Length: 349
Ligand code: UD1
Image (cartoon, rainbow, N blue to C red):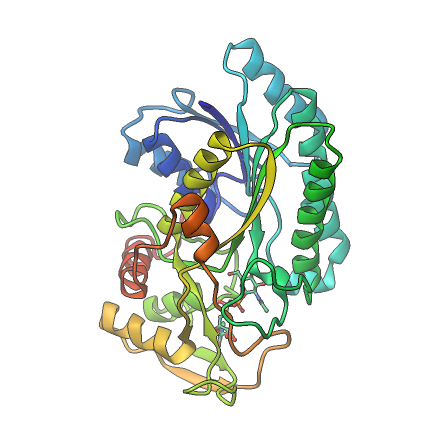
């Protein structure tokens, strides 16, 4: 396997994964609409990999995942150049929980229908290896902790439903036995941090919904204070606990998933990517203050709808099957995330 199509490869997790894949020797075609990402992330990826220009081992096609003919052309052209696409890593999709509640059909269209189109085209071109960006959000408010892959799938918002539906669609396609599909659904916990160079990182559009980028923007002065969504949860310090995973660990997880699929029989492999350790909101603030030497002002407000008290991964399957586990600490996530924020106060803009 040498040539990989990376849909959504200019985004936060996508760009870090592109770097890891280039370093591992793969050639990449990134297919990205750039509606929520910047091609600058990929210029920086090239810089970090010592590649001079686009087109050398990484090319970028700007396009929407629902654009059947454009995506079809990407597969055709690669074949004609003697570099057929061997596998796809599929990041492209919408990811805002709040937007998914107000515009659910958009999430069905882009996330679910977009993946169906991709799968159709892959089958047309005898490409059967797919790594899909799923999310721990599909477990909803599971009571089982740590959450293992066998927990019930009960998403509680349309974003979660769209991820769970794609997993179901991929399972159905696999069990049809029509094609020798090799699929990995990677269920991400909470991705944070940045590449240690500070050249690539998370660049959310507008005001961030998630804790880490919000804290970072308070520290840099773009936001004045953090609102903590409830300190009366049933946890030791009253704030919710999450499993924050360094984005470089997550990126390496994609490489391990590709290797795993390559070595194994056709299958649908659903696996958690987390650290197996939970931290509370107060613990995150504290780690960030220590790493940055900045005070994070906050106020405690009402709980956010749809939040749960505790959420962290059972990571034994990833370790056992892919020999993958998270190596970086919360402290290095804070240090690396802050380096990125400091050197790029306005993201890629
Ligand atoms: C959220 C999404 C989840 C998605 C994940 C991606 C919701 C309900 N869930 O998860 O579907 O897969 O992001 O990373 O949106 N917090 C604050 N103040 C803030 C922001 C967050 O107190 O300004 C708290 C939240 O209440 C939560 C914790 O910080 O307890 C983490 O929040 P967040 O980073 O948004 O992640 P999740 O809610 O776990």
